[in-house]
Image 1 (cartoon, rainbow, N blue to C red):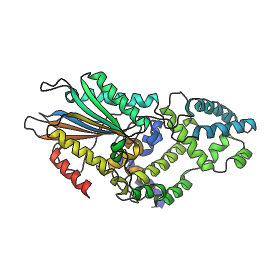
Image 2 (spheres, rainbow, N blue to C red):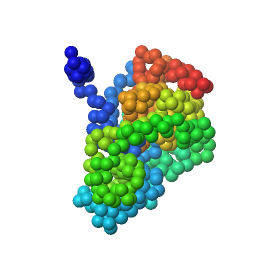
Image 3 (spheres, one colour):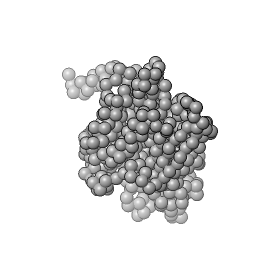
Image 4 (cartoon, helix red, strand yellow):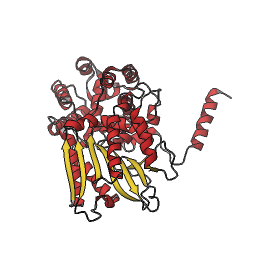
Length: 427
């Protein structure tokens, strides 16, 4: 049998044995296309299956970490860069018909977005209000006074970055709107930065110029093909004279296209890219996030280890709550650079696999599933009449499993979870 026939037969067999309705990673990235924004994706509430609570157990405490909500791009000049470039091309009569139409969109984007680098958008505040409102609806027992109490106490803290503080405030205000008897103490910066935004010198060195960079640059050269895009927008002479770094033009324009969903304007740039280009550009940014902040085989445990102080705080607060402490919930607000390492350190399903082949990373780790804007991890604690305690973990409001034996998974015996994570933070 000829080699091509063997390959065709194998493909047919794979198709026949694939689960019905199963989506490839490429399909999930493109449908909806907003997934391709990865960590710039506006939060999408995409609930998964909800396993019934074991009989006799009632929620009594919640521990939470949330990334800030949707924001404008953090690069100060990225909107102006494209505004100036398209203006220069228009003045030189070097825009194609599509380029002239795109310039109008770039002008609109510039007016709305320039000068707001890193600022929380109204969409970002709404994301946190939505998460808080659903939390109250799903676990009302946690937030209602009990045993003669007149109020329910919660401690909420954030990093000192303004978009994070405002995300916390939006979240807390939504909860108080649901239950006015809540007493929420809010704090930011100071000592809380030591675990909400923790970096070690070793990790900083790796993050900036570690062995991940040659891998990333090699795949960037392979995956980024800007020629078609540039030809659709500009005259050839203008590209040759004014756009020397064409791959950066493409990746940065895609970054602007991706983050538009976070801003209060009805403009898109996704239509400038083909599906294959969108997928390739997403693969590249997903690779970047994974190699620098995820469970990369290149980094080993280095990235995940920076979340140890944060995990220690989860454990200490949970110990206090289980022992009968006065807080009904602990809320923490930070950044994606905290969420990705924490998810890996906790060994959450879909967030902790170490993969060394850059072509296979997207099969085990997708950034939009782990750290969209307002991404979050929630520990929900349950107790029964025998004072037995179970904990259930959610990643972006979806159940995840832990590498811990449990006949009631995804509900786990707190003693086993505590022992498992205590060992991890001591290593």
